[in-house]
Image (cartoon, rainbow, N blue to C red; front, side, top):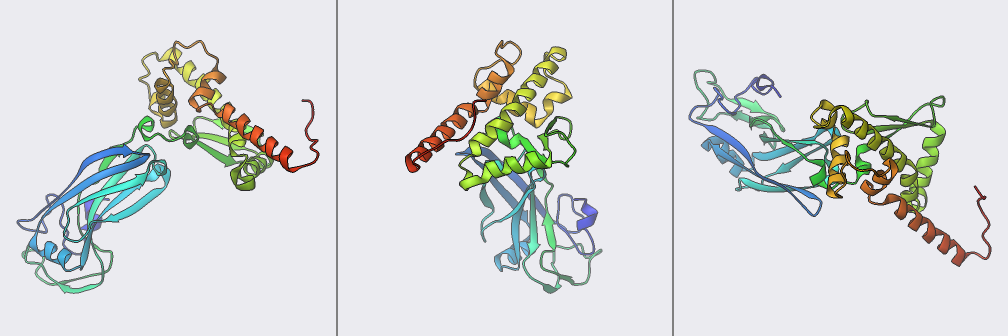
Length: 306
């Protein structure tokens, strides 16, 4: 957010602020790591301003870090404990995508009337101000942490977004150009309804089967497209290879010691491997369902010979 949006109509402390004299504020991400599928941030701030420190001690304001991952529509505030300037934040890794933005702020916890701090530049601010709950009294520049999809350990299903199309669209359309982050899979209304019914039926019993039917075909197409792009860009340095879904697939393949450029395996074989043998899991689920039905029914006769 631009400084001028904060810096009106009352004094704000930020880096190189002219509103405060002999004051400073700094924010730092000491460590970013992944532990047990949790994204962990160790953060700290330093504050040189007795007036704001006293307000923190008295509970009039609070120190928070706003963590935002816009591509995943994730945003949450985390509050520092009173008297502490360090905080460890843990987030489920599957809730964030590509980049995480961390912004430190000191905000008002309640309405404050007639506030005046001796650190304000009296040549600019020589009268008390009123602060409403949520007003920002200090902030630091946003820090961006770029995530490596391979390190986060999310399933490849996280790079696929399923979209409901209209009645007249094809049953299945794969769009690699709609987003740099995810592969868009567009299903017509009938196919979409069938997919989600199967996926969610009986508390997700058929989830792996539904995913294998859809995701295996999608990732197979994605593998083919990646190998096609590698023909013209052997160094993988072009814009195409900066896309999150491309990096995710390549990272998973590298972890399995599969060379996309040199492998003679079929596209579908590579796709099944990077999907953690999803096809085998789907058949295993199906077998369990059939065995359960056979155990609990006198006669079973369904399906055809196709």
